[in-house]
Length: 384
Image (cartoon, rainbow, N blue to C red):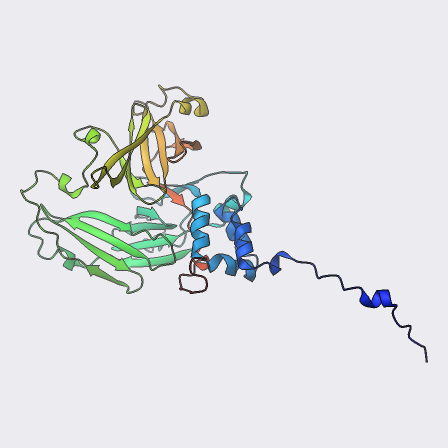
């Protein structure tokens, strides 16, 4: 038999080298600290879907998602253009070669809306889908002849077909009722049941119906109390505007700031003027003038002239970003416009692209994937 040599005393006392620490071995808190340094939501989604450990760290913490949204707002992916008349809306993507993850999101989405139902069996028939709203990653469309709404997420390809509100919404109307539209009720956190609100009005009263994807039913709310004295126009349906805009022939948009407060942005003399709905010195909430943004730099970034950009049109205000375009109403409608964005917090101006303005434009913002949202309350993770 071969004798085995016993280890020397020095060898017996030497500890084994520690096992190497990998990123998988880090706890969720450290992983979230690392993820907060990622530069965009598409990059975070790519990292979270790479393994179960990363997926759980992102999905299980509402506080982390709030912090990430604060530091990295969901990105604009492009604009939908909905021309007047029967047509499928067109999508103009935002091209950012410096962000391959964002480009991958755009390439993988169904922005051609191929999952929408066909109008009928006639392949030559013109489509009748019209965009009503674009919010939280969803597009709300209406089909007149089919009498239904479609809520579609181009990123997940999730499609929900919803009937129009029942005729009971017009009961006891006491006059000819007019539809004000149908819109998506925004969800701050996401991952909640989809809700739509449909509104209509008569001469002095208004009514709403709310649809929930959870109940699959429309809940019809009572008529509002009549407005007295009887109004001469429909301005009673709107929130009071800032004094500077009263009786002025100015086009403005209502949206929300970064912290979700209602705001108004109006182009005046090649400047964007902003008001925010908040409490004044007397404690009463009203429109408070916030700031104005001179936009002379548009001439520099577009290499154009003021004569070429004689008018500005605000398209939407979403999450504290103003999306707007230049327009020359004196030229032919086929003349291309510049589409731009403005951060209300920093005043930073960004160019999106240049194209013809045809129909109505709707910015499409990437939403958090539903798979990365867990709204179940866990006492150990609450606030984490």
